[in-house]
Image (cartoon, rainbow, N blue to C red):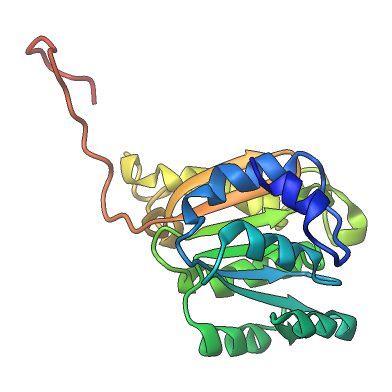
Length: 223
C-alpha cells in the first residue's frame, strides 16, 4: 500500500507509528481514498499523521485533529483544524460534533487511558456516518497499570470490546433473559482485533443475517 511510502517520503511534520499499522490502515481505509471522507484523529502531536491522511485520501478529504497539547495547534498553519481539549471530556467532544457532524473515520491515538478510550467511543461512535470505521491504536496499553489497565482487568476498553463480540451475535440468542441485543448489536457491523489495534465498523442492523441456500437437499436444518 501507499501509506508507508507517504509516511517515509512526503510528510515534513513529526509522527511516530508502529510499522504494522500501515497495512491495517490500508485494509480498512482504502475504500475511502478519493471519496472525500471526513476524518477525526485524536492525538496528533506535531501533525505529521494529518499530513499523511491528507495525501492518502486525496483532495476534498476533511482532516480534523484533537489534542491536549497546545503545541499541536501549530498544525493549523498546514490548513488543518485542530481542537485543543480532553478526549475524556464529552463537552469537548460535543463541540467537534456540533461543528463537523458525522465522521467517516475516527482514529484514537490519544491519551491511551482506558477511561478516555471508553468515553470517546461512547460519545463519538453513535455520531459516525453509516459504514464508518472507528480505529483505536496502541491498545496494548490496556494491559498496563499506568494507563488504568491490566490483564483481563474488568472495565478496560479491550475487555469491553471482548464483550462486544458477544453482542455482535446477540440476535442469535436463545436465552433472552440473560443475553439479549443491546446498542452495539444494532450499530456494529464488524469487529477486528490486531496486535495493539481494535477496529469497529459501524453498520445498522435490525435482525440476524438471513441464511441463503443453493443446490442443497430439501431436509430440515438444525436450529
